[in-house]
Image (cartoon, one colour):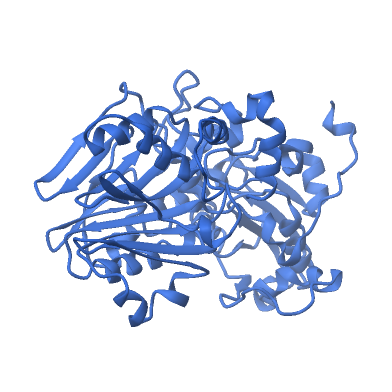
Length: 495
């Protein structure tokens, strides 16, 4: 179909425009052999809160039994209380913050999940998404498994339980061999802290140490908050085990070139984290600098869409020589409104989070910098906000390529027909959001910002399917027609 001849589709606008941003996946944290294991885990999860705000959980082991506290809501709402931490005794703990991409937000879906297996207990948290999770789940249920949640994470518990290998690590690897998609696992048994990263290293996982106690976490910012020392990244396809005898590394998969998710650098990781050896803040500034070179604009001021657009806007301003200023002020204290979400209140949703700084904007030609456009509804309202504040011209620049394909690896993206760039030409998008001009960073540009000369089409250096349609793993659940009815029903209650 020629998109230049299609009418603009109706785009639904939920309350407060929450659907018009990419949603973080999840965050995991674990520590082994520290007297303040649960409290340290809570602090680590607090640093990872940006990766998931729907729920949080911690499981500890005291040498005899496991203890679990799982809650809906933010880490600080529950795990800052001494009485909660006191219910999590022990020298080892694992934690998880959640944004659901499979399985709705119910207490039984909050991780780490726990199961009593013979002869050990197993607690596990998962960042990512299994692209064959529904297929495996159906096979397990037909074989007699009784599922306690609707998350794909529970699949690995059942796979480990069904393995006949004598050692935990071998049973765990047995389970991993059946998985497709993206995962970083962190969990506990009676005697071990363990972690695993998928063969392509799509989702991040790092190792640290505090007072001699080993730590696993999704990002280095979780190490910084507790004063831990960064040791190294867990390698793609690596399984790492910590126990009383020390550290053990296993590499059960054939060697593969890593393909980490490019969106960790664009949006998901905290700016002060280091991912794959690259400081995220500097990478985002480099993306802005490349954007300025590829898509210049005659303007008076560079204005970031806070907070995710700030580093790229700084890079754009430094390269273009156009002054940077805060033309939009973000309210950091907005939660869900108690007001009945009528259409009029929905229309005010963006203004609850962002306000125009009229002194900076009025009478100026401005360049708005953001990290991405998903549905386009928030972008439309921000452009109008700038015009209402007196902006003479509004030029929109996006520090990533157009998102044309949905994600199946742990990012909550809409179906393809809800992605603005998948259904509209560049000019149609510009008209839709109401900007005087619109431009995106090219795919080649984002690779240059990452330190590569170009994208290797034969062996891409990153997982970039949202821009290219090049999915690095099989999409079994998406392609298996026999699972389509069940898949649709489960996805409807998930992301």
